Image (cartoon, rainbow, N blue to C red; front, side, top):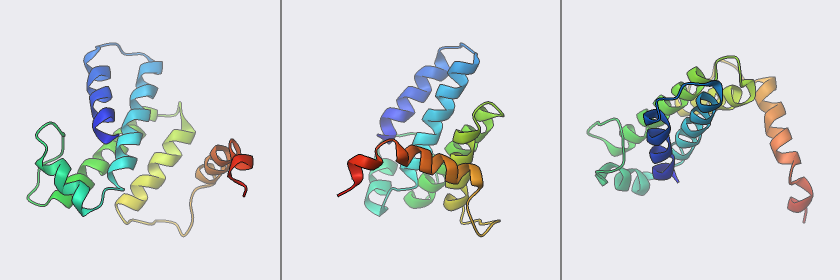
Length: 129
């Protein structure tokens, strides 16, 4: 999934179009990439690090390379959101807080919690056992 998101980002950025819809699609792709990368275990990080087609910030340590790339993707998503997509921005900020181990608050932002519950509500009945 991470490789597909990287390719999508490259294609979008090469399109040379700059409008709000494309900016938000790019923000969504960067958020997806960052979210996927922060979940990589040691083996997945090593495979990504060894793959010449996988775009990572290069460090000597595969896990650091993957984590730094994830953080960079999440920061980019936040910047692209601006004030136009507050829900995605809240999700990206929360993921970045986790990825950097920096908790400035003892709880998630109200907008993140609302987005989490709104997302879960869509298939709540299907998840009931």
